[in-house]
Image (cartoon, rainbow, N blue to C red):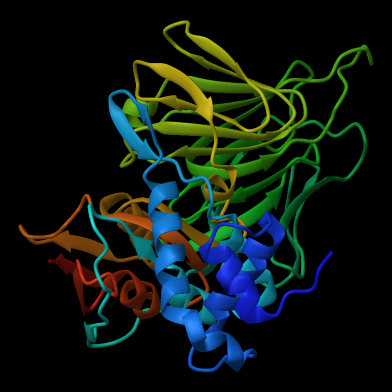
Length: 395
C-alpha cells in the first residue's frame, strides 16, 4: 500500500478517493485535533476537511426510517464516534461529538449555562424490597451477606452486584423480591438461575427467589438489559423458558419469551413505545391481544399498546446506557427524557423550546449535567438554565 502524507490523505478524502479505514482514521484525527495537531503540516486544508465531514454526517443522519405512528431517525455512519472513544478521553470526544442537522449548515455557538449548582451523574444505587416488605438501601449496606430468606442467601458483592445463592440444592421458596432503582441510579443483579440483569434509572424488576420447574418469570418496569442463562428443564431435554412481562400502565400486555440470549427492553411509561432489542439468540415478543413476532439478532420490536412492529435495530443506541454512555440519535425531547432520568431532574419546556431539534452524537454518562447540556447547547438552537434540580429549556 502506498504511504500517504497527512496532507495527501486530506486531499484524497476531499476528492472521495480514500478507503474506509483511511476515512475512519482521518475523522478520528480531526475530532482529536482541538487547538493543536500531531500533524501541523496537515492544517493547510483543515476548514475544507471540516466542511466535508459535516456534509457526510448530515447526509447520513438524513436517512430516516419511519415507524407509524411514531417517527425515529436512523443513522448509518456514526460508528467512528465509538472508535474515537476508545482512542481518546471521553471528555474530549464528547465535547466534539454532539451534532445537529437542519435544512442547511449553521455554525454552532457556545453559551454559558446559568446554574446555581452543578448536578453530578447517577450512581450505582437501588432498593431491595424483601418478601416481608422491608426496604434495603443497597447503596448504604456493607458487602457480604445481607439476609437469608427461606434458605436463600442474598449477597452483595464487592462490585456492588447482588446475587442469590441457595443454601442447599433442594432449597425451594415461594417468596418474591423486587429491586428498584431511583432516578439517578442503576444496578446489576444475578438472579437465582444465574441470569444477569442490569437496571437503568427509574426501573424495577420483580422476581421469585426460586424459579419454578416450568418457567422463569420476572416483571420489568422501566429499562433493563438481560443476559439469560441456559437452564434445562426437569427432563433435561429442553431449555427452561425465561419470560419477561412489562406491566406498566398503557404498556401492559407485552411478554418476551426467551431460552438463552442477550436483549434490552425499554418500557418506561413516558416513552411512546416499548422497544425490545435483541443482540444475541432469539426471542418471541407477544401481546395480550394475541400478536406475536420473533426477533433475530440486530432486530427491534416496537409496541405502542396496539401495534407491534419489527425493524432493524440501532443496537449501539439501545444498550449505550449499560455501557455508561449517552447516544443521541433522536430529537431533543427524547434525549432530555434520558437526561432527566439519569440526573434526577425535572425538565421544563418554554413555549419556544425546540423539542423536535434533531441530535446525533455520543458522550459519557459519567460527566456532570452541565457538560452534557453545554454540548447540546453548542448547536446554537437551544438554551438551558439549571435552577436547583430543574432544567429549563428555551430557544
